[in-house]
Image 1 (cartoon, rainbow, N blue to C red):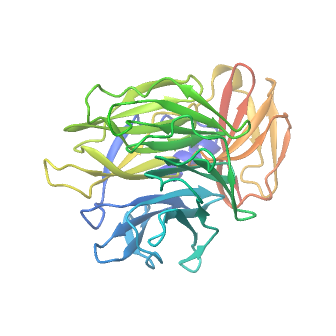
Image 2: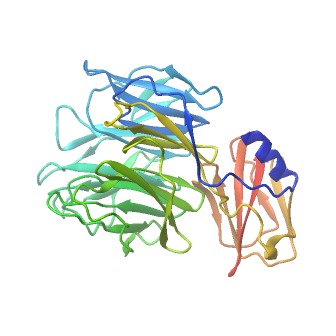
Image 3: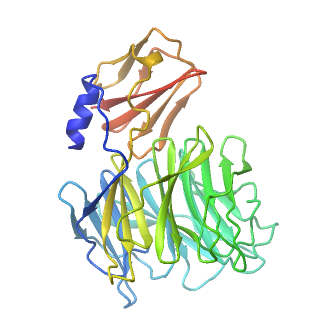
Length: 388
């Protein structure tokens, strides 16, 4: 189905996705779900504790909807977070021997092995309560919450090229305890907080990578109940999606970066809380749990409504060719284009060029399908292309 839709786009046919559709997939293999998850190269990777001192890893192939066990993670812990940089999966966890140290590993997909990278170490203060991660362009980020001293910094950037951690502008909200989640769109990372351990604080902040600055945005539209908070999140195109746990149920919200606004979308069926999520080819996979029905390993696939992929009236006469291409992608348009952005199918920004060009060199990109986002002061258009 996905390949058929893509072919229609490439042939210039206007096609509309089903509207905010949830489709149940095969269950995950175990009831206790996953500790963390990410997607690279068209597959999802899930981490599971077997409660016997081992962290097992499984890959999910969305084409066959099957799971395959991979090599175990090299250290045992109970809290894992991750970010993806340049289609490489990075996982970070507490050191089992030092509460001030965080261990970072990069997944070697070809050898099914984990390479240890530079650890993140704090020198003073008290150990962080929790931590949260996201990636922006070619950098990874970790936000620590709890009594981390200002001198030591609570927000760090990981540079994979030099394998170093850099202290960045502190998050404005520091002493939060838990139930937070993150996503990123373009040059921005977003953090949805929930509480400080004592009261609801449904604050929502964005981090601008270009200016190294934080901005408070409109609050997350939680309910007023004391047990409300975010559970999972993901990004598709220019939209961030947030699953919100409320006592006895769940609901989903979608955030528009363009409009800086939230809207409700249909909730995932028969679930109370999201356990994990990842995006493959513009489709989100969400692992859920429902204690009222004793179902803890269901997986649901979410297909969004059209994310402005269908051209608007101003951009009907844009043509890109050759498609597929090995190196040069040419653009023809009767409407001025101010700049373009290239995204992967998970919505991650690959290239951002503020200058209009009618020829784009994509020879350095890996083979695969990408989205070309074309913009001027009034309009946005999206075009799919394939790099051979």
